[in-house]
Amino acid sequence: MAYDRDIIIFGGGIAGLFTAARLRRAGYDVAVIEKDALGGVQTLASQGMIHGGQKYTLTGKATGAATAAAAMPERWEACFSGTGELDLSAVKKLSGRQVMFPAGSFFANLVSRLTVFAAAKAVNGKTRKLPRSGFPPPLRRGPVYEMQECVLDVKSLITALAGLLDGRIFKGEPTALSADGRVTTGEKAFRAKMIIFAGGAGNETALKLLGVGARRTQRRPLRQIMVRPMPQALFGHGIAAGPKPRVTITSHPAHAGGTSHPAHAGGTSHPDGAEHYIWYLGGNIAERGAKMTNDDAIAFAQREMCAIFPTIDWRGKEWASHAVDRAEAFSDGAELAAGPRLQKYGNVLLVWPTKLTFAPSMADLVLAQLEKDDISPSSGTAAHDLPPVAMGRYPWEDAQWRKI
Ligand SMILES: Cc1cc2nc3c(=O)[nH]c(=O)nc-3n(C[C@H](O)[C@H](O)[C@H](O)COP(=O)(O)OP(=O)(O)OC[C@H]3O[C@@H](n4cnc5c(N)ncnc54)[C@H](O)[C@@H]3O)c2cc1C
Image (cartoon, rainbow, N blue to C red):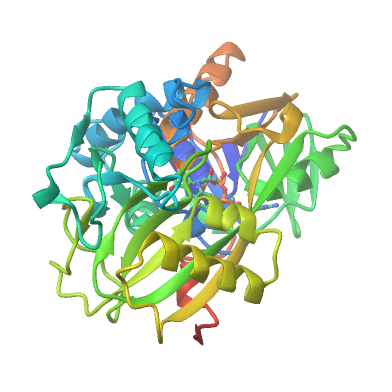
């Protein structure tokens, strides 16, 4: 049987690119086909945090997701130092650390202090209680815990992965697909030993093309909030009573080019010469905002931020929101899967990392499946005559800002 490629992957987000780079390294002849832009939908909209699990332990006990995440920071760090499964030494970190701080209302403060304490202790010992003098501004209320979990400049990650796949990334999307590994994009038909869909919400297209009627996917909506100009960078989770952070904050340099700065503690004032930062807000603010209009979500976020950071002057800031779905394999009760997921339909695999953090273990699942199916690397026979793909954009690059 003649194959055009060993493996064709649809989707140029973290799932498609990380998996493709691992397969390439294992010797497979792999091509990635992306329909819009590199970094896609969720990946460039993510907060770029490499979780080690603490965030998932706010109930005070280690959950499945926390346990699965615990090994991830070390694997990523090995990649960043050039000694891991992939050489990602060109990736820039926005921060080397994240903090957890109490963000309860006055009366709930005690509960949130206890929740921070329980979460900080539950997963691993790589968490340090900061002395008051070490609190990143604008935090004033303790306890503040520092976690050795970095925050990435996601575009630099996408660029580094694309560099490992030079000449193997194309623009296109499937118009026909069969479970024996044949796929058509526009006028062109290809055959691969395995076709992998890493399309996020676009995996629903694969299921449709394959004629799988049963429910296999779920989406969980978020409305991320953006606010600028912020004088300092802050990276971390504001914890109140409850299983999810009241707010999760990442900070993105807002000077021309939006370049990132070197690794530093959970908060800082512009060591990189950035004029100011855009705070990108997730957590409960984004979960609750998903059920609101843009204006209501911004008003809600503004009230929340005034309550959590009463010492910041919030007048005259510009606000925007970005609605985006987390796309996942279906799981009962629409709860977060405890790790990456894979579904198999003949010679078609559908993959979901569930979190950017889990991309390495998702690639493990794919490699194990290929081994199980006795699909070994060979050299491909066809150059894909498809156009190249451009880098996508961060939500704040296209945001509709409103001064309030
Ligand atoms: C707001 C938000 C914040 C998050 N923050 C974090 C975080 O801090 N840390 C963390 O670990 N995780 C985080 N996550 C989760 C993480 O972003 C996702 O799990 C991960 O990015 C999913 O990657 P993906 O490649 O599967 O999907 P996507 O990034 O959505 O990429 C899918 C790609 O496939 C393409 N595609 C779709 N259909 C087709 C098709 N038919 N043909 C060709 N291409 C197709 C799309 O255009 C897109 O480029 C966050 C998610 C969201 C939404």
